[in-house]
Length: 399
Image 1 (cartoon, one colour):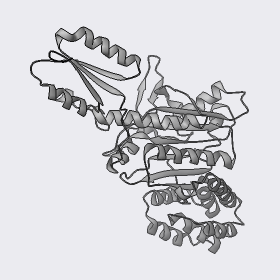
Image 2 (cartoon, rainbow, N blue to C red):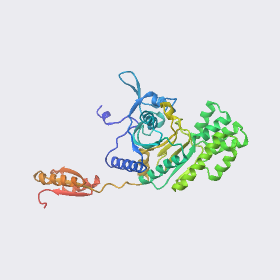
Image 3 (cartoon, rainbow, N blue to C red):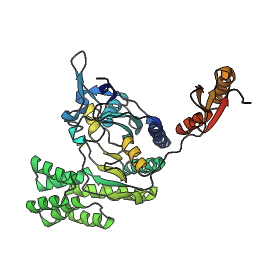
Image 4 (cartoon, helix red, strand yellow):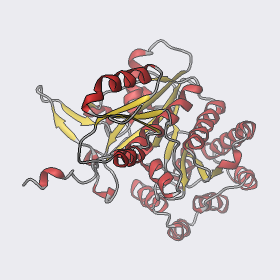
């Protein structure tokens, strides 16, 4: 029984010592990038009413939510996703605002899914939501922030794959797919089963131009030339055509930002969040099988909460990013402005006075009362393990 008390449930874990320090430093670096782009912090509750994440809104399936009840019998859920919570907040507090609202956040999300074997069910997310701007300039700013955030973390090699929700939806509508057929196609794409996608398309036997557009779903990267050809093939399909034109306009802004080398267009990107209406994207790097960042445009989500406003955002999964950094041997620089003050009982007065003095100078100070079981060198090793830069001793024989 006592051994069981030492364990955590599946999908959650303790983070401590150096790893915890690295994670907090990473969060600080990411947060600083968001602030430099003029975004303002918001905190939403860890749990909300069930309907904030309902099936109609298009967020996490009900079976994957952590649900419980309050004293009044209302169904509550731990948030699986920040975006609906912030959409609710904006609809409540920025009802009359007709200028863009730029918000950033940091906090934990919870997904209770058996599909996440070996993955965390509680993760920390850092992200932004840009409300009230439908332009390609807004899309580009969001992607520029993603690139700047990943660079600030220490990543050198990463790629952001960008697609468009309306491209896939336009294909579904043009081909007249049933709900079951659409779900089958979604599953094939999600599993990267591109041979299955080709077979699916062959069985549809669509018109030649529509077939060529469908085949783009199986491409990892769509070039500017591919987009131009796709635009010609989509001339008779307004929804698909507008999606391609929006990607072309976005590409102009990405070039101006100088981040186009980090971006690739992948028209087969789909999301389990069905509230996306425009560009959708995911960021990948070495050392993790999952994206370290996801995001996209959701122009209709706020309608559910009574406010009409185009919106776009992204969320970095801090735990995934930290894991990737660790596997790539990227270490965030530890604050060297630190000291250990080790003292004997007879020198406690001057030692603690010195610690107070150093803290007033902005130095992080760890104090420790020495004992007979440990040598002076033990305390030096202790400081090294804790990444403490300087050690001062107050004991007999010390000046």
